[in-house]
Length: 403
Image 1 (tube, rainbow, N blue to C red):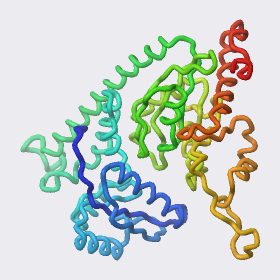
Image 2 (image 1 turned 90 degrees about the horizontal axis):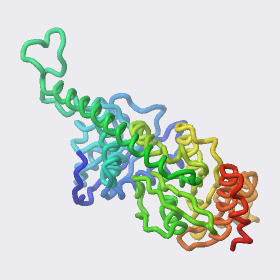
Image 3 (image 1 turned 90 degrees about the vertical axis):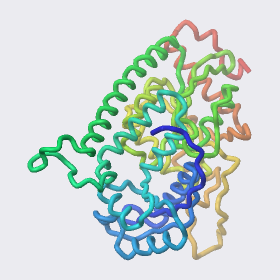
């Protein structure tokens, strides 16, 4: 299931809906992100389709007319894959596949595929396979439509276990085996974390592709894999960092994303133990992204799920070199100034002003404002360290004195 293969660019169409909760602007942004996910997975987006709906059709997700329009486009342009922005039920996926006669994926399936490509260590591969098995189990029926008997029970006894039941049993057994394997690895990793002693632990958290691994490389002078693609980092990396003469540990964790599949949140909760046990969180934000505020909310939601939202946190607004405000004419009487027109200085006067010293603006790639970042992290780590070892405060002077 997790074998790595060279993937040719697959021609794909993207499909989303516009609802009361998800207006056209938000739907467009979600499809932009889905297009980036498709590119990361090895696909080429040929066209996007959207439909305004009160609620998705329980049978085919979209309306009949829109499905027929997509079917015609797929047939005329030799499209191999249709990717939906929302999670499809097993019945919807089955019905749509029959109509479109091509491979049908939803956002969850696409993310799982990317994770399968990116998983490097045995631990990450085990977690991804567990998530894939849990996603696959309710969808097995659709893969065995050529079988007349789908389930056992009254009127179905006689020939013994059918092929679909055999596969269900195999997948359930595999899920049980993988969960046991993860428990074993969790114990080993807990011992490793315990062996690190009483050093202060700092965890980098944030949305995917915001520059966490790049920042990790800059401050730890290491060579963690970093790439301008989603989910470049799956395996947690821990490095010893020294600022001034103060040593501490920094861990780079998997990035978060909106609509993160439930199976992945559950499977990767053990990976996020580094976040749970951290003394300080560095919440990295890509301020050049047009909707970074929603990214912050998504990350905070997942931190809340893993009981880590009350930890000391420094907001690190990264990629200031790439930030560009949309020009606005003050004499324009037609248009209203929006957040898109804010300069960095104007942003600092908004809710960011309430964060105070816990908001740092940097560019990890161009190493801009890194001294202020190092000073802020040094001060926070020093305070945590001195509380833990009250008689060690004289070993670590103020950052200005040290530098």
